[in-house]
Length: 68
Image 1 (cartoon, rainbow, N blue to C red):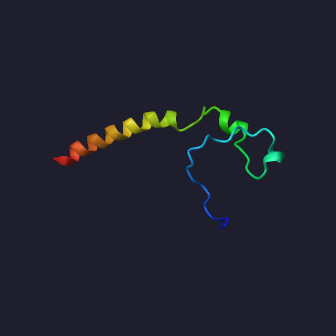
Image 2 (cartoon, rainbow, N blue to C red):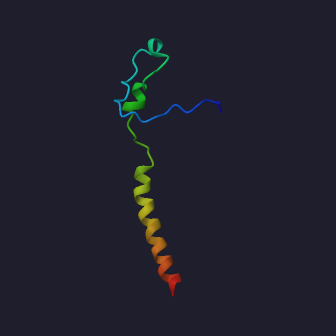
Image 3 (cartoon, rainbow, N blue to C red):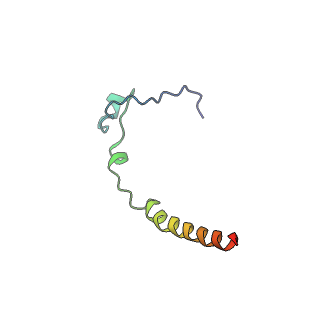
């Protein structure tokens, strides 16, 4: 890992536009177009919305059984 000073600060300014010409903006490039426009088709959100309720339900059942 590189040993550099952290430079991230929240300035409240508008984000940089999508990068179109990397060579002319090497010192401060914006995000690439695929990073901004890529669809999240295989994300974890669709799985988590089924796993979390099932896990909570199982946890409640175990809690009610072991409470007595």
